[in-house]
Amino acid sequence: THRGRTPVSTPHPIRRELFFALQRLIGSRAGAHYRALRAQEHWAEERFQTWRAAALQQVLERARAEVPYYRNVTSSALDRFPVTGKQELAAHYREFMAPALRAQVLAGRRPRGYSWIEVTSGGTTGVPTTVIHDADFRDANRAARVYEFDLCGFPFGTPHYRLWGSMADLQRARTSPVQRLTSALAGEHLLNAFRLEDAQAEAYLRELQASRIDHLVAYVDAADHLARFAQRRGLAVRPLRTIMSAAGTLTDEVRTRLQAVFGARVFNKYGSRDC
Image 1: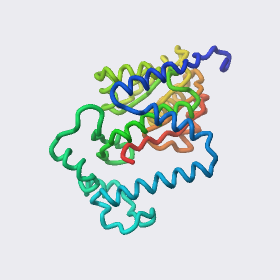
Image 2: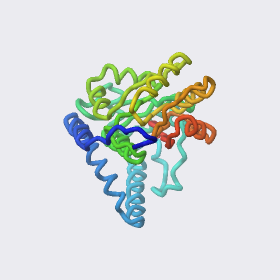
Image 3: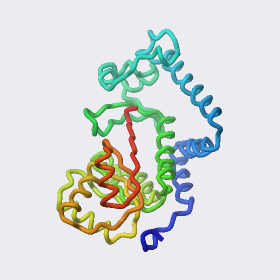
């Protein structure tokens, strides 16, 4: 039990396997990437460092060979590559594309099925940035999102609230059948954090108080808004086990406040779609 209450039981891995089966149906290899992450937990440090160096070297060599922006880099050593910021990416967007990809983008001809997509960052730390994710990156990203739940102590499928503020993400959660099924398998209960006001904050705190769900994934500013609102009003707050904060900077002050109000372990997630 947790603080005298019976917690929601940890789900059977069947939810995770159903998610990866769904991914296979649409052409994704996210399951293989996830299994690789879990396998690496048991590697010796030397083996991991060797693998990481080889993987990085492969990326650098491919960039120098195929990406116009890097064609004048004379060596595939990491210290010879320019540091790329958001400004450079925006100013030279098409030069960062390999020729085959650039031809598809300019022609507006994305291959059918599971392939690359153009995405925009949330813009929580400045101006939104547009980038392209290829199929392999999408697979690795989805695997990492499943793995992060393991690291934070509530495996994929554990019931949790998701207090989220991205309108694009919220819209997909409502309209995409695949996204709705994915959310159900993940055990996600969505709360809209966009333009969160006090009346909505009070309603969300009442829902948390009445629920047996012990975990929260949230925009850090939205979670902090709930915490500060509860402190101002002197509201009783049911303790949570975990808060996974995202989409903003988790300062020491905010971490301390979230821990004090919700009694939870607070984890700092930085998604960074544009990296």
